[in-house]
Image (cartoon, rainbow, N blue to C red):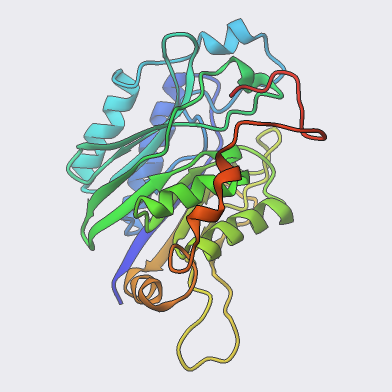
Length: 293
């Protein structure tokens, strides 16, 4: 079995950037000890997503450059450990900070830089600069090349996010998170994985972190197996609420065979019928103040 081992770093942040750097580096080393090929952080790890209930000028001042010492430390560790690291940060950016993910491969090369497209503009995230597009990248791993994309938390609630990544060839979507993972949000992840025939790895903050409850997950997207009458549970890992590093073993061979034969993904889509999906028009009851195009 050709497995890709994905470590979900379901850890609580400290009060300062330096604490998060030290704790994050230690968690990555623990992930490597467990046999991980990829380590994934929760959303906005550099500041612990500590943005709610605070003046915007206070938390936006904690933004850091994507090429700064914080990111470089994880980049260097990725090469040292020979393990991919997907680290998250409140990124310094002209016009306002961004909610970002950087993916470094096992040689320490940066393969992906993604800024959250669907910012939560109904709350504190209205002070963020949204990302402009979704990206995928080929990630070199010990198990061979894997096509990887990213979405962040609220992106999950829009089917288009995972759909675009699937159309770009994604086999795995990395999804940092910072919110309560209850049945409906877990169902969204399950659906995104099922309908696109791809794996989705989501890392959340543990219980005890405000407005979070752990329950990080990996869904492998394989709903049916040959010679089995019933569908199977696509969830291959669901953590509890406790802080920890959780390892999921994704069977890449099985996922790839499934994608070659099953009916979802892009197999039978009819894009010419979907023009309304790209219309910018918003009609009642969905009109909201503060919505950005």
